[in-house]
Image (cartoon, rainbow, N blue to C red; front, side, top):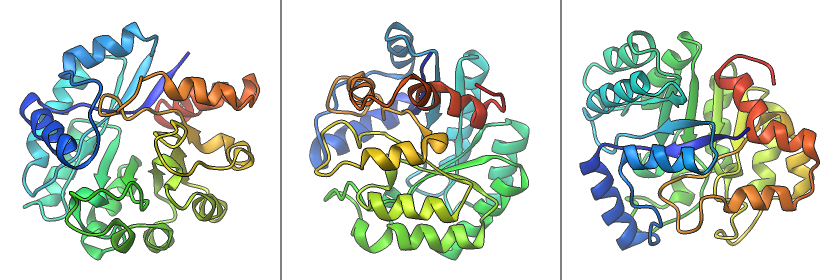
Length: 274
C-alpha cells in the first residue's frame, strides 16, 4: 500500500498560472495535468490514497479554494483533503471554521515562501489557534529550500529552523508537518523533531537527487515514526515514482518502509493503526 502524503491539486486556471510561474522561475513541470487527470494518474501508478494540498497566494482566495477542495473530497473517498488560509483574509475565523468544521477538511496548508512572510509572524497565530482548537493538522512549507528567484523575499530570511522553533515553541500541542525533511537544514530540523513530539515531516523531493543535499539515512531511521511519503505531484521535474525507488534503495527494511509508505499516514490522517 502507498499513501502519497503530498499532492497538489488546484482549479484549472490556478494550475495554469502556477505552471507559468514554474516555467519562469523553477523547473519544467513533467505532469501538466488538471485535477481529474492527476487523480487518474495516481490511481494508475498504484497510489491507494493521496493527501491533497493547495494554498492561497493572496487574501480572500481561500474561501473559494476551500469550497473547491470540499467538492473534491465529496467526490473521491480516497483523497485526504486539506484546506488553506491567508493570514490577511477578511473574516479569517469564518474561513477557518468553514474549512475545519463545516467542511471537515483534514487540516490547513500554508506556504511561507509563497506568502513571503516568516511562519513565526504573529499574523499566523489565529490560524494555528484554530488548527489546535479543531484538532486538525497544519502543513507548512517553512524550510529554507528551495530558494527560487520568483519569491518575493529571500527564503533564508523568512524561513528555516529558527522560525519553525519560533512557532512550535508557542504552539507545541499543534500537529505540524514541515515537508521536504526541512530542506535545506536537514540535521538542524531533525534535531528540532527531538524537541517537539508533534512535529512531522515528509521526504518530498529531498530524496529525488534534485536538491543539492540529501538527509542522512540514520536520521530517517531515528524518526521513522513521524516521516510520511510524498511526491509533490504533479509539479515535479522527474518521474513520479522516483522517490519510491530512492526509499527502497536505502535498504531500510520492510517495517520502516511500510511506516513511511502508508502506516504513519494512516495513523496521522485516518486515526487508525497500521
